[in-house]
Image (cartoon, rainbow, N blue to C red):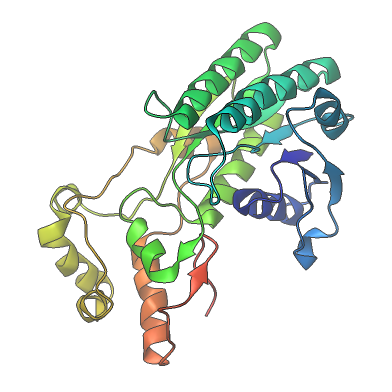
Length: 288
């Protein structure tokens, strides 16, 4: 199964999850990934702006995970023209190649930036519309995943981000794997869900986290108050939360990593005297 954008942060996590689940993975990107555990996957060079590259990437496959995209947070930044051509033209080329190959199981990486606020957000509007059109024309099973942010960042910043619009990379991978399985089994026609964290907070804590959140964290992770104060972790007034019941019902997926997991990880490191101020995570909590 090809994974476009496979050498990126999310692409590597998704490719790894698919390999661990027993799938044959074809990693399609402009450069290969260098992680040792991904070398057993096939690699094909693929620039999604080039139709022949895309056709070669999907040839002979029965499902596709389409992650390849540029977004506005890339550093160094890329032009709006590049974002549009990769995200829109690339998605059209991918779906057209799937049509030619008769592929009817597709997972498409959308985004919570979906909308009219940026060129990137607009490309995701068009991308979802292209998926809807392909489903209408072919009857393909397509899952569209509106991922929240999983950009690599400093450890402490990543933990704080989980309370806002951040999501652990392992949840990205697990949701994508569940979507592949649902699409291959044709348990979906056209299905869309948000991929976000679920902290298990009561509604009153979600809505008034700035005042009630530390107490809730302390109740669940003794010592959390000291950690939040020591590391100056900024707390939002309220925590963004989405209804993910349909994702669990239809895909069999629910998020597994939240802010409490970060606090437990931080507590373990703090007790060992580990300096976390310069620790960088690839959008997943590193192991102890």
